[in-house]
Length: 512
Image 1 (tube, one colour):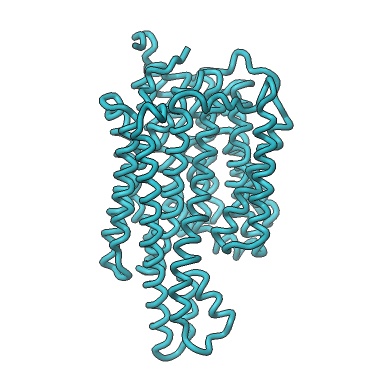
Image 2 (cartoon, helix red, strand yellow; image 1 turned 45 degrees about the horizontal axis):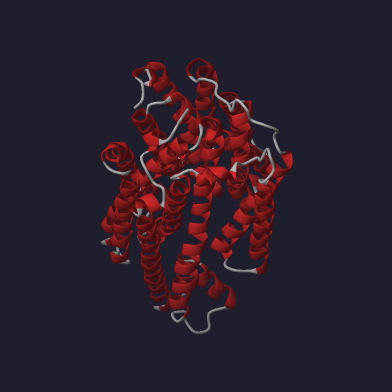
């Protein structure tokens, strides 16, 4: 049992309000550029390669530096790293908002990724230090999880709203007041915490972790966007090679990442559950966004607004998770959440290619978000509870890295199944005779490309191609949703095993 003196007071809860700001903004910056691309492209005129780097460099460096920054925070102090990251994030946001060239915007986005990598693990590790009571900690983690999910959903909505009224740079300037609050209030409301015996910081391992993550994430994203080719496959293999080198080096007396964390009951399974959750969400979101815009014809801002019920579902899941975990074994609660998420995905297998499918898509994604919000909140809490206090930063960084990889893999694997196999297989037979090779390639690449090609055709061939593209895409979404549901059900079975997987009550873990 936790002593009453360990229960958090007003200062800790106010500190949590400060901590959710960076979580919200880190997630928001992953998606805020989705609507800004046409505007910044018109002003800065980037090449195709530069545009890809503008979009991707933030996520690349965020994922690549999480483990290093989480471990660094354990050594130098999590609050110190958080405040330094807040300053960097704010300055980089100003630089991005005022970028006058593609190169400058790429550099600013890279700095945002470095800053984001310091913020995410530091916030979770500080929650571990601030909330000693297991029930309060679970609630705090749920609030943090809801904020992170909210950022991912609100990013496109806020971006669309700002871009309809202001310069594209304002999408970055919203970060500045929040970072200013963090830097001003953090020293007052947040405690400093660090590993009392951190050991030597291994710079070689830090470099190896970056060299492992960057090419792997790059390869996965390129396969999701362009299909299989030698370059992304080589990048993934290179990342795996550096990853193996990194793991071998962690056998040293002072490793950058203590792999013994995976021997703590519940730790590995919690990370696996969170990773597979993001695998499913990352993959299916790729389809639902295109469904709303390409199949149903909504403009991007309206399509983003239909994501708000999904955020409500996520908030409900994270809110009820801690209460359920106090009554039932967390492994069973996580398994139940995964089953609910799978049920929502199966609803998506019923949608059609007309406006009647809107309700099923919104309902399915809301149900999925409710179940997976519960999973993510409890998985994060299990990770923090399982790790010794001195390793909280490294543990939270591992959890964040797992979710980044899960999301990227979901888009690559499920995207390849739904688009690469099903959509392209069906649309190929619907291409009109005599279509130029470049137009045929565009039509087979994406449903939006097929609709654009159809608009340039005369006679009945155009509407027929557009309708065939919509039907083929919906078929691909059906298969993708079914595969994602199967993955979640398999994960639910693993978590429900209980003792064999080591998923147990967080408050039974020694936190001293």
